[in-house]
Length: 356
Ligand code: NAD
Ligand code: DAU
Image (cartoon, rainbow, N blue to C red; front, side, top):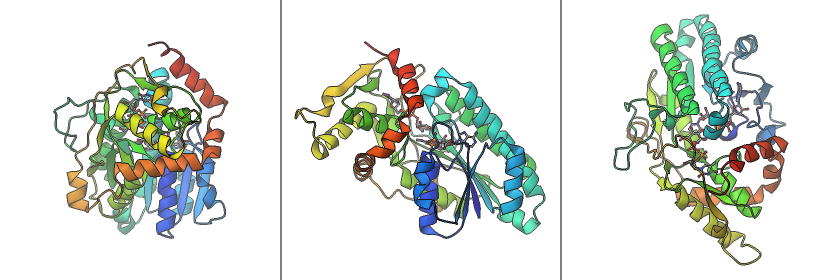
């Protein structure tokens, strides 16, 4: 059995669904169900007794100790986090609370559990921490991609909180011997991504006839990876990764935001044309930039490729088509997650960007 945290969010839910498609090892899924967590993502597992869902906080040491003692997982995979950079700019406290303090408390719970395991089980146990390339900060246009030895230089409250959690995980290995693994992945896209993030926001706004807001000049670069490929990388690291190591995960797919938005518009033009026959590109609006906006991320994934024989299965072309088709086929899901809470966030984040 494995314990997954944050498994009702975008990547965690994809991971749990893929895991249980591929094997019968049960999953305990601990998720606080914040605005980003959605049990609908796991609806297909409702009658599946290999999946045990528990609503709760990674920082609740009483609850986590009980889950560990009852289910005796062979691994804990930590996806739970506050994950949206813009929200971290508006309200950093939740990011410190969950990403730093929550991870610390989770590590403490795991340490107590692990200390009491027989030594053979201690050796087999893994704590896998899911992190981000944003901990490395921003790259110049011609700089080499981030390798695992790149210096940490986080620039947003989100990336600073993830960097802190990475350091705590590292310290729990070096100090207490906990068998940890860390993955630092680039931007994901795919089914079940909350429509506050660029790709699902653009798809949802395009279909709703709203503006497609592009921060700054639209030339910021991200290195996009299909979520299923991130999940396969995590599975691979869990299975054969070397304890104490970190692995960068990416799709060698650097693209400027404006190019991503053009691709989405063109796909929608072809699959679901606007009633007036005009291009969705007409909805593009350049808006005020994100403060401290990192210019470029790029991942050097040679370590995971060479040492763990991992490769992404999707190209951007196949992955973005699947993604657009998924959102078109799942408009009810989109409608449900765009609750009153969501509308409050959209007005908070975008009203100040008007007219730029
Ligand atoms: P998400 O915001 O979609 O989901 C986060 C999940 O964590 C939600 O289900 C939420 O309810 C849960 N959660 C939040 N606080 C919690 C707490 N205190 N206790 C228990 N559960 C809690 O995020 P995501 O995009 O799926 O990202 C998952 C992980 O992957 C994060 O750690 C993120 O930093 C990392 N990551 C994300 C990306 C990306 O592009 N989305 C890329 C690299 C790494
Ligand atoms: O790099 C990995 C990270 O990718 C993860 O750690 C984060 O959890 C995840 O949210 C993502 O962070 P980004 O800030 O890169 O993703 P986001 O989708 O918010 O933005 C992608 C780019 O698009 C970024 O340059 C900002 C820009 N953008 C975003 C939004 C929401 C816009 O131009 N307009 C928008 O409305």
